[in-house]
Length: 414
Image: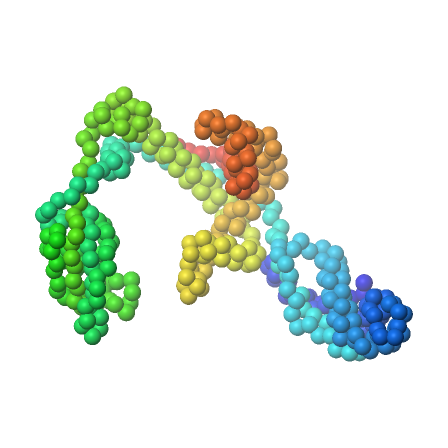
């Protein structure tokens, strides 16, 4: 196809090209479209496909021209890609389309191309692996968490204290001073579930009683319109429950799981914490290696890929529409890094033949099945149904890539 291509923008990964289709090509496309219409349309007084071409072209001029233009744009786009040898990163956009009678067809084509990543520097880096031993504080906190999960709540008749669970009827006066009917809330005092002034009022009130007085809203209250305001508040305490933690003994260990003694529970908790610490240390090493690679091998990334990631995280975090722009500005640097990180892993995996194979996936599924005490076929079917096989494949590929990087670089233990 004969077309003229004029570059307008060629910096980075964005391309803006002006495309012009000569008038003879436009006329030929219209003739072809008219012939197709003539064989398909039905006009009164003529058998299908037997209407005069001139009559068909006159009656369906707009539709024929639209079909010709759409076909020309698609053909011109393919010609641009083939001729310029472009590896597209995303769907291109067409701007400023001009298709006037008796004139060439012209338009601008806005493209983004995939980056060409060479990664000449992948070895010779030195990173530190900080493996932190499990402290007694960590062990104690984890065991206390287990105690908290098995706490019992017992009703009391005295005024509530910090840490108590209360059920209250809470009402806040309207701007005109009218006190509406209260709404029921259940909260744990001291858990920042209510503003301090309201918690203080609750703790001044015994079960079955009501209290009412002005309360000032904090200056840092999330709703700016309410900051610093003073309103009359009425609380009615309907129930107070106090938490009781189980004794930390062998009986508690047996209740938590299959442990003969408290010492056995402590040993298992310490082992789990140590495994978690090792996992965290491995993650930090991976992050440091990626940081070194990105610093030593700079390359641009398609803006559309970054935008897609920002949008995906905005939806995942359920960011309100009116806050999306601010979120995008703050999150964009992290999105750029994530895209560059993924491209580095993808490039190394392809170059060093490290991509996960079917055998790798089968082995990982079998490993998961052993841990779950299930059949590999059932685990595979479950992962497939949940759409998580791709996630598993990426995880295996990443493990292989970082294993390769660990062999090529120095990992020092702190």
